[in-house]
Length: 213
Image (tube, rainbow, N blue to C red):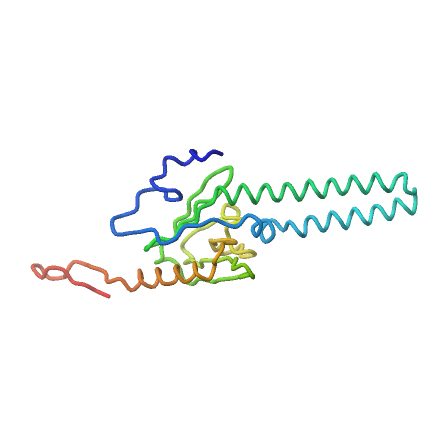
């Protein structure tokens, strides 16, 4: 994937030109290291392999001695290193390919490493937002709970989805820096959009336009 793969986009992460009056308020990406830890469970996977390496080494040492146990330990340690590298590579590819965007009217998630997909979530379909996993460096995940009529696939969204919400998937800005600041931007933009006066045609001929809150 090169930097020119998305030259067709009018702006990075935006699938089409924004309507007049709509503006970008924030853009960002997942943090690779945090994504590897929280989404790909790199610590758990590596820890399991190290445990298996130690367990098998002890068994072989007891039954066969150092001649068999030490090569076995090296083999399992190499497998643990390979799994660690693979998880880190997957996280790097996902983080590099992803752009999260907040505009004055919607949230946009351009995601996917092999197959790029863009999810547009208008503020009008968001029922609730949640902020989770804010760590010492300000890393966190913002999940968007949408109306039930907005059909989403957890498999297509992952890892950009709130964990364990399979039946009603929630798009998520996953593992982003300054998560609390971004959450405030998102909440204020959504509130401003929902409070925006709506202009509709007046019911009586010749009455001009009516403005409704």
